[in-house]
Image 1 (cartoon, protein in one colour):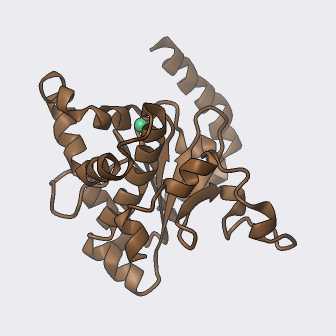
Image 2: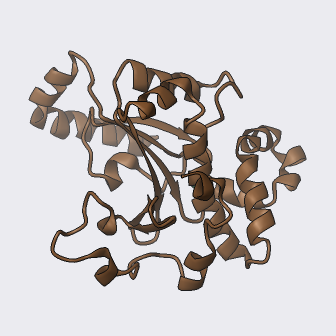
Length: 245
Ligand SMILES: [Zn+2]
């Protein structure tokens, strides 16, 4: 706790006086343009990894960056999504998973959790579609490779779940919101983004927003992807998201 209080003092003595105008402006209301959904994991900090400031990101965090399908719970996720879309007019939603996610490790052995951590067990049921898909289509993979696949497929499952929300679906229909799938690598800080056209995750540097105009995607290949070639060939081919996009 001492460290937290020391941090608070530093924030008040340093950041606050340097950002008086921003704080004053934000006191009249927030206008974030991104809803960032990620894991509660302490190694993933949305504002830090995107170098965002106060007021930039509207954030949902929970174990496994899970979006329960519409109507599945009365939890805060649904209310926060609805508020983001209807009141804040959010135009981009990022679902950001991360490497070596503890929640995804739990999903790999979910049966063992039922007695030990019943609340976690119940929570992970909201992404049962991910577990079943990976067990059925990638059951032959080694444990670490299966975990990477689970992390990636889980992001796509949550994007599918977002589409079950009437507010999201309606705004998607009018092209007023875009959904993005990211995987953050906790070892080197790199981010992969879901490339819908090629049904795979690529380095964010190869995404349409950052892709250099001078060179083509073919030239760059997917060399910067964190996934092995073999895995890239196998991954996402069994995903419902793959077939319905
Ligand atoms: Zn996690």
